[in-house]
Length: 471
Image (cartoon, rainbow, N blue to C red; front, side):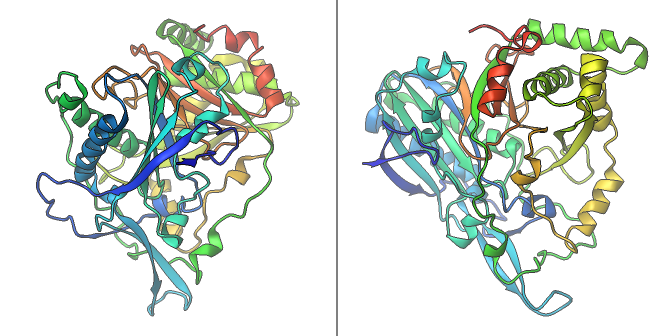
């Protein structure tokens, strides 16, 4: 056995029992299966970003140990058969001739079925309540995730898998976590894979002593081939000799802590109504999510003690599936565009919840496909790569994930998840992750990562905590 420290300390008590590579199991081989997927600017600019790490906390299954692990490994292989690019590898190749610089490389995803990593771990001293009932997220949670401290480019330079999963048996439950290379897919792809895996598991769980459920799959066809502008050079040459040149060096960041907040459907409806009432004459409809994020922005600005004239930014992402021609709902790859709404702390405080939500609403409503296409066209000439450090400085917030993702439908055969948590990847002061709430029907949950001092003030903030549902 080996210890898993989760890359952030506090991982004592989590032991890795085994690790192996799982190859996809196909019902039938897709016609385009043996292929190289060329990557778009949306994919490539995430080469410097750590993996997507999300996981669900499940009740104790009827049977644990090797029987459980083999069942999950088998259903995992079948899910990989549908999402076979997740069993591939990122490759780097030199680009020769043409208009490309003499020292250029390209990065592609080779669908070679090399496999995804499957890790079995045990944390017998950790109970479900230690995680689900705690406002503050214990650092041991980071140890439930594989591929810690890995940025996307490492998968190419170090021949790492682009997907790894870890099944950690707790004293009275199971935590199933996945770590997905962000260049290969986004949150939509992540949760669709998890949904597929859980459905396969619960429809074939006889060996666990559970009654298999009938498959209710309505899976849409996957679109593996990436979407490019018509005049884009494919593969896109990156203007440096070695991919290692863009891998960020470890920089000191302020220590952070995390809390998990649940908001009932009733609380969300109340927030939304308040926001819309405050701007009743604006002829605009504030959404539930915009109202919640406005609440967060105001409370975090107070918790940070921002001066009235200090600028603060809220980074949000706009999804392009179904919004941009050529990108279908089944598109596999990154299909989101980030952008920042910038206001002063004084404006946020003085003008209220509704006005703040309205500014977020206006940004989403002003999405400009022509400008987006222009940015994509110019990126290969002047490639830039996402950096967490650019968001630091104590005044920015970035929200990832979506309350539309089906988190609590991931019943592997013995019960719905008790809760959801993310790993230690991409954690910094101002990171906020949004999920659907466990009760559905419009409820939501937030994972908030701040400096310890700011987080302590946030949990004492009357406006914010007044909307939080008490566990």
